[in-house]
Image 1 (cartoon, helix red, strand yellow):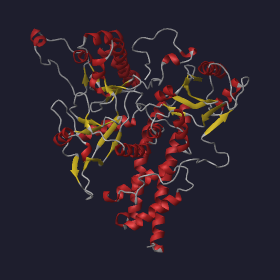
Image 2 (tube, rainbow, N blue to C red):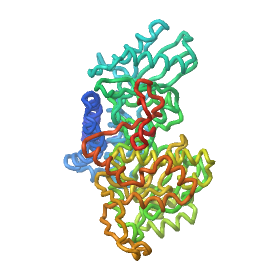
Image 3 (cartoon, rainbow, N blue to C red):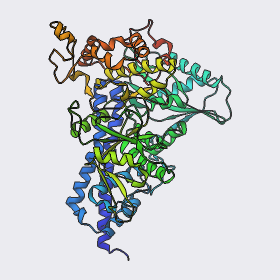
Image 4 (cartoon, rainbow, N blue to C red):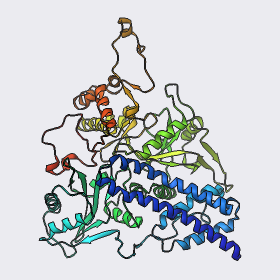
Length: 603
């Protein structure tokens, strides 16, 4: 049965209104991203952080605007389902020549699911699978930059070509000594490639826009020579002179995986065709899931959509069961995982023990704080979902019993679609990359692994401090070890801004009875922290204590924390590099070894 002309016209108007909502969103998103270049050149680090946090909020604001418009202009919630089918078909037609069709499809889903009843969330009304291909999309406007640029140097023109590549980004702040830096790059490249032995197709490809984050701008590309492709990134930073320098040359997939880590904030990069940028990045980091690449360039809502598609595909092709995650059980979160899937699922409990003075709303605000903050390579990113449905038969009975006991308000087990399939539905959950809990790692670590992990643990805390974050609960179980050996914090329910805390030294006991008593003899405010009391909780293992005290003893002194509070209050934004400081070019290394509390750790 064909729709009548009036219905079809109305469906087209709705589809067009939805696409206008998305186009407004992406225009504002791109303006914020493009503005990163000017903020970088002006050394406006506070403005860069503010813009990054604000950009995260854009998507939900535009979705809410579109929902309100559809309800006001079209009374969308009352429309018949055949109208919604036509809306989707018209929307697909409007995306035929669109440059961000995959993002527009996700936007359509976000708006539609705010309006329709859940029983209509299937192929007829939302994009369960992509309908428009993102292959070979190009910005063919006259004078527009392609997603990447290619250069073909000879041995003689290698230096000149690299200079042309750098100058092609149009940075207006001058370099301190660009020829010197390019010579460093050329020598690093020749060392990586084992000299200059060019094949017929030798070329250097670079993404046309720089990637901005924290206090750095990153040139990202790859060197192609015969059948070999070598990924690289060149970080550009401000030197003490105020001019720009190329700080290092990083080569290989592992280096790029550290730069694009899930424990780092989202890059700001100007993109007309984001799918082309992701395709280029994936060619250099094939082990990194596409959803994490979209997340890394600030398109986390589409990344979330892709993650869920990957998750459903994994469920279809696996048979293992969800279980309670290994490790010490938390007092605030119930954590479970699927052994064959490298993520954990976290659900807020209904009730907390007396020592946890918190609430569901406060915990959610902490996770939002982390989402909007620069995670400096030390805090895992989270994906937040509502009304997630799982097949009940994939859950171990012990896990279901714990969910029903501790998370009763969040869990529903039913055949709510009436199709005979029993589902376990979580009204709210966080999903994070799975890591080895640090306490478990230390139990099985060799002496060398233990030393590395304890040093990394202290470096992680110091990086969080530099980013104005006090982790609150610093127990080993709240940190994890990644496959690259980095230590990352992942338990956010007690997190605070460092500048909101009051770091104190424990007052001396008033008399012998105080000293012998197990009770606290001094007043403690809600934001008071006593660093010297960390030791008994953290350093019971003599081997761990010896390593910790050798590398990070200052963490037990209130002066360490107070000094960083003052620097942050003075407006100082620390350098935190996503690579080993020893990879920095020689002219950038300090002449003498810095004090332990000043050394910048490699996240």
